[in-house]
Amino acid sequence: MNPEKTKQDWLATLDAFFAEVERWAVEMGWETGREQREVSESRLGTYAAPVLHLERDGGRAVFEPIARCMAGESEGLVELLFWPNLTRFTLDRVGDGWKLRTSDGVAWPEGWGKQTFAYLTKELGVAA
Amino acid sequence: MTRRREVHDRINAVEIELKLARFAVDRLYFDAARGLDPMRGRPSLRNRDIVACRNGLEGTYFVRLFSVFEDALRDWWEVGTARDTQPKMTDLVNGCSSRRRVPEALRTEAHEAREWRNHLVHGGDANRVTFVRGRETLAVLGQAREAESGHYAA
Image 1 (tube, each protein chain N blue to C red):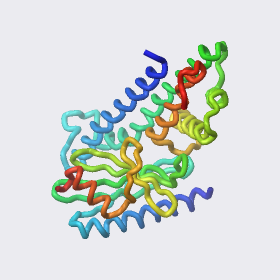
Image 2: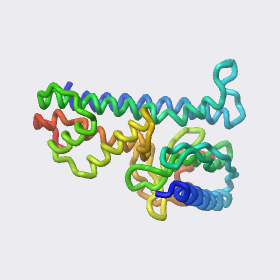
Image 3: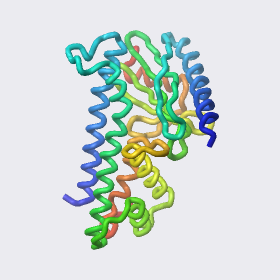
């Protein structure tokens, strides 16, 4: 593994993922913003990665990259955390897509996308 | 209470503590993000400590999770196989997996969890293992003693 290339590819993947989420989040009336967080991985070192914040009607959703180098099939992990109910999900990068899981590790039956996000925010009472 | 139940109860207890700690720290995190000052009146703690705590929380509980697993395997070794030695965890995982005929994938996952725990404690390279994934793997292998006595079927 080339750590520098792996890191750059991961950051590009995150950027594309967040850009897509931002696109349909804006369509749904969410305000969006990004900040940076420091991520430390033994194989990649310490680097700055983007964190995506969405906000609407007092509700918030935060997409936070956790690591690129994961055990198993995952090629990167992003956590999704909702305010105000503090419900947590994970998004695993697998192949060209993202696999959504509950905080207990149960795979979400639907694929990740705009409809799933809309469903989650509705059911969780986030930005209702 | 059976040993199998005891291992599960200990793993569940660690997981509940992690969930509660996450809930509490996430609240502090969002309070800070909303412009509140959750550390007001506590001069020895700052908002950046919340971030550091959030970042380290899962690792802290992963180490505790792994200690339950290690304890269960050492118990299996001493009582289940009646041996008076202190093998390395690598050998214990391999020995337990072999005796139980666990799938190769599960043994690999157990070693990944072991390597991640070693990284957290000692440093060195390792792929990240989430608490949930570690719990699933270690809970199964942690039943070794029952498997030896025929009370557990994977």
